[in-house]
Amino acid sequence: MQEPKNLKWLGVCGILAPVVAFVCILSAITSYAQFSWFDNALSDLGVVLGVTRLIFNAGLISSGLLALAFGVGLFLFLGRNVVSRVGCSVFVLASLALIAIGVFPESTGRTHLFVSVMFFVLLPVSLLIIVISFVQMRKIRMAVFTLFISVVAALPWVLQFTNHYAVGVAIPETVSALAGSAWAIVMGSTIIGRAS
Image (tube, rainbow, N blue to C red; front, side, top):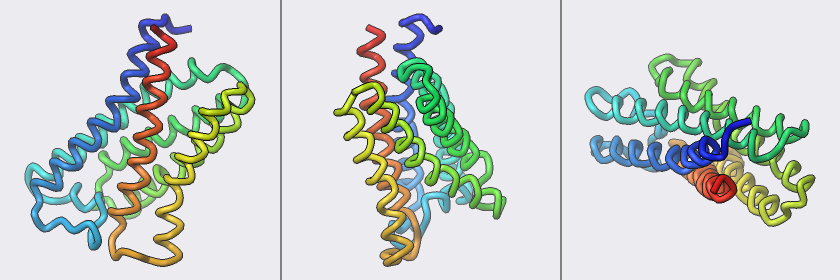
């Protein structure tokens, strides 16, 4: 098992992952004046010539690697029961999908679409499974919080596909990612507290 010091740094990775992601995403948006929240997908930034695509893709790859390390911290924090392992494994797969979004930009066609869909599906699914783990551990507050986050992460996509409130998907992508980010920051802080 990891030493507490290492567990602390894995928790730090959970906080840094969304920070790196959104700093790079916002920087890419700033560098591309034509970007529209209603007409574009965030991934459109990954194929813009020049510094925009470099910032965007490198940001997703870096944040995905940090999320992957955080996933290891989740394994150690949540215990070794079957539900915890499944939930953490799905979270790790979501992290790999995030890395793949940066590695395979929109110009790769179906590959990009596949990994993008996988990320936004696997993220709320992993959280729903982790809710069960928290209930088993009798951590009810964390279970309720995680359930709320999983709903917020999934809801914009449900609304997008039922009401089609925007031409592009930048809004549901951002809301879903912000929800996952809030959870990662809270969990990262919790892991740091335990390690300390």
